[in-house]
Image (cartoon, rainbow, N blue to C red; front, side):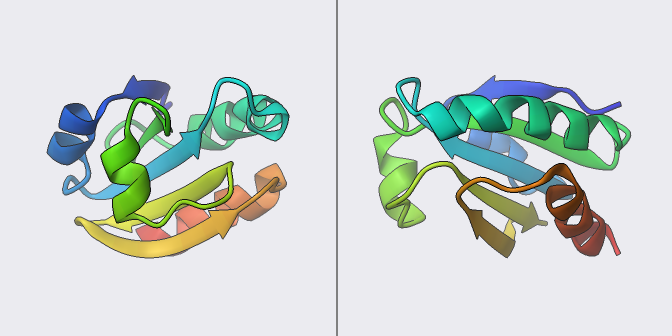
Length: 107
């Protein structure tokens, strides 16, 4: 079962090229971001550690990444596959939608 980690820019750079990676761009003060935490954890838990790496990136601490990936609205979820953006999802999502997006990246 994949757990959700807290990443910084260095950790993300090391992880993003390792298969399917789900990055949650958020801010501590963001209400919808807090709402999505349980959805993110439940969706990640449906996959094994070797299938998915899931993590959160605080946009206030990871300003360079937020700029690089043009994060203008939070929460924003980006699914990477082997270092390339597979899909990008902005705003509040249902668990089923997030899970399906992960499954598509794994296919």
